[in-house]
Amino acid sequence: MRRDIQPNERAFSSKEVAEEVGIATPTVRKYGQILERNGYEFLKDGDRRIFVQSDIESLIALRDTVKPLDDTAKDLVSLQKERIEDPRGTEVAISDTYESLPQDPNQLKEVLMFVVNELAATREMNAKLTNDMAELKTTVSRLQQDHHVISSTIGNSAQKTNVKIEKLTEQQKNYYETMLQQEQQKSELLQKEIQSMREEQQKEWRSQNDFNSRLEEAVQRPKDKWSLFFSLFRK
Image 1 (cartoon, rainbow, N blue to C red):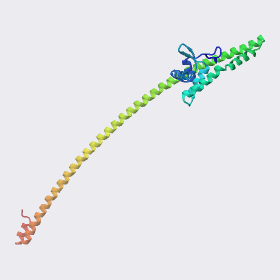
Image 2: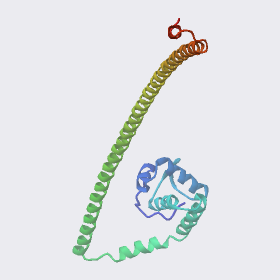
Image 3: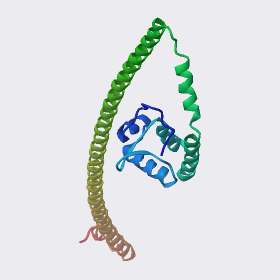
Image 4: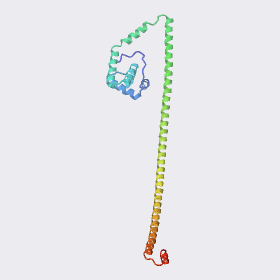
């Protein structure tokens, strides 16, 4: 039985604890199971855990620990046992508070008014914090949507860029193939021209050789000068 809870102490649900600690609701349940496994006591309504401020502080300690969770849970269980076994600090504080209250009705009224004003200010602050939390959630939701839009835009841009690159690559490939084909055609034409020139040159060489042969025969067997002259152009 827990005796470290003050009278009229506020109780929190798992969802409220998750918002208070800044963790997810499943993580609250996970931390609660780790604490109970090591001997921690929670107030319960059936199987549902009811959290108080000291429980929230224990969850924050688990959240921020750098040690293994079970080791930290054992330390928190030891602290809870100390509070349960020696709850006098709370009783002394309550006793001192009541004993220090003024006996004069007017002074008591002033104290009560001060307390009421403080409670009103606290409620106003809580309301403002609730609104701020709601606005923060809305902002986070918008940021998540913006992130999704940006991610989608980047993905679409990347896809379009890839398509353009593939198209340019295909165009460049076709261009090089066309240029290669044209060069091959030019090379074939050049080879044909060279072959034709070679044949023409060989024909000229044969004609020149024939002429030289006739000239040589005419020189070796001279007749009259006219015969020599006509023999040069015979055939």
